[in-house]
Length: 409
View 1 (cartoon, rainbow, N blue to C red):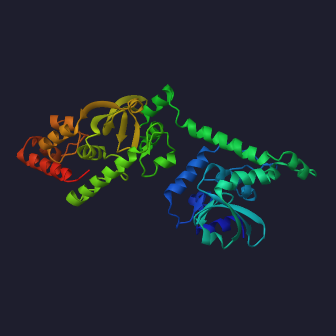
View 2 (tube, one colour):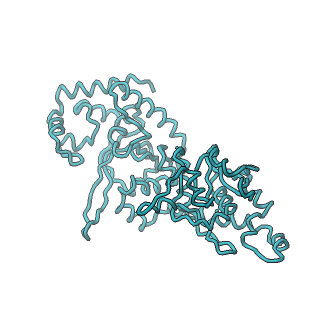
View 3 (tube, rainbow, N blue to C red):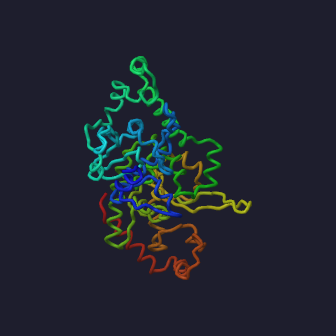
């Protein structure tokens, strides 16, 4: 069976023709695979890998996401050991091709198989139709295996005295992989560097990709981590703060779902929901002050640069910022490199304002002064603004405050 047909078989991929034929040479993922965190981390790792030395036969060593080249199939062993060395999620499996009997290496996480030499991700049961497992090399044993077997040197040496030279260069494999790990980590760390040039670039493209780069420099977390629904904490901050956040946000979510049938979710769909998330958290836990302001940024179009201000709302506790919409916890000083603070509210301040504006979780200053928020020109918004300090809104606000107080911290 040809390699391209094998790739389709292992992933239930239908061969595309004409304009969509490029899909045939992408990294193919079986439709039953449902593990976004695992796949995002894998893609993140591949992007950050440094260039790898071609083998003695001039084969390019590459983890293909696009434009797959089947010449890399015979370099399965190199690919497996490199990937497992930078990503602890994967064990290495040594096995054989059932048809040819040749040794073959691939990667495994639970029942998911990633074979970089075929550029496929599939289920173990499907893969087992073509490849038989001989032994598993646990991720924690990969470095020792490289030291003891020097198994990658054969791809970089040829000649009559190969065995003799291999003994002479017995540290080649571990040194080879260690250098890749070193340069990979350098690429990871470069993402967190923040100089004047980087600050300028971020301010010009802040809204790109759901603030991914912005959130990354504020937390020093991998892009794949930030693509998940987890809350990212800067390494200088004690992660025990998450225990408080998780406890309180869970109680808020359950209250709002039960009493209002509203999902105030601190893990999913948070971007664009800064007001509800931050105001409710401040109401529930007064240790976190409510802050409102925004993010100044520039937008260039047709050679013209214009200044803009992204209104925003977040929380502060001591020298820490918890931004529930961006799902980050960052040092205040670093956060204010980009964000502009305008107003600060204690729990009591927030309660008093909600007595005036009711169940309107919004930008307090502008709502109270009648200024449009987010270009909202709807008739409903104008009517709400006109009802500030009305008995109707006071009752609405008191009702919310009473329900929040009913929760025991």
